[in-house]
Image (cartoon, rainbow, N blue to C red; front, top):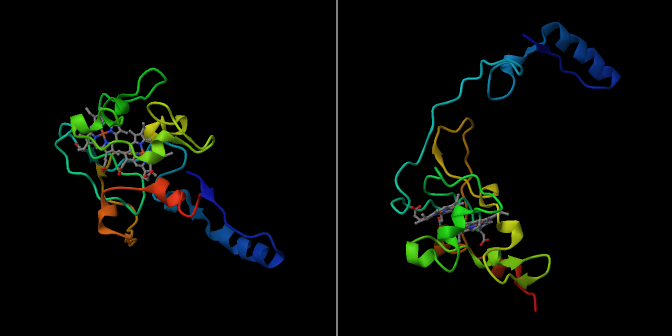
Length: 172
Ligand code: HEC
Ligand code: HEC
């Protein structure tokens, strides 16, 4: 099992580092996984993803205003997203979303911020890989407590977004 030594570079620090060396910090005491950095004794916490069929889940409140919403349903059988196949768009494309009860992708996703133009169809390339920003939520106890609580400019923003309008504020 490895032991990591801590210390700083200056001469005073070196003296302190000397004393740290005699004690050392066991690597199982570092970080949140409390297991050796090299080795197979990492114990994963128990967690489970939402398993209800798509369309039967409650939408999850936005983490903060204009945060990417968490995926409220299972993604089983929908991944990976490839160049040929994007299952997400088969329901979330603005053309079909309403019909299947899904939230349509917002205006920001059909706008190319490089060319400053609306895209002709589907979504801008930078938005194609949905799970780069949107993730499903698992029932897992956080390893570190979080006291952040968001402030919304309007209560409706807890379940919808308007990033493109915000980006365009004051732009003529
Ligand atoms: C079969 C249709 C279908 C597919 C495929 C699908 N979704 Fe959904 N999605 C829905 C529906 C319906 C909802 C709303 C209710 C729910 O979660 O069941 C939803 C909700 C969401 C939400 C939450 C929206 C909000 O306003 O809170 C996100 C984000 C999302 N989906 C992303 C994705 C991504 C990313 C994929 C691809 C991995 C995907 N969805 C695939 C139908 C679908
Ligand atoms: C680069 C990060 C990123 C990618 C990639 C991305 N999104 Fe988003 N998404 C966001 C953010 C941030 C928001 C909220 C702010 C906004 O844009 O309005 C959002 C909002 C949404 C919403 C909520 C819309 C509303 O009116 O409230 C849906 C649904 C959604 N995205 C689906 C998708 C799907 C489906 C894809 C893939 C085709 C995707 N997103 C790709 C970052 C991303």
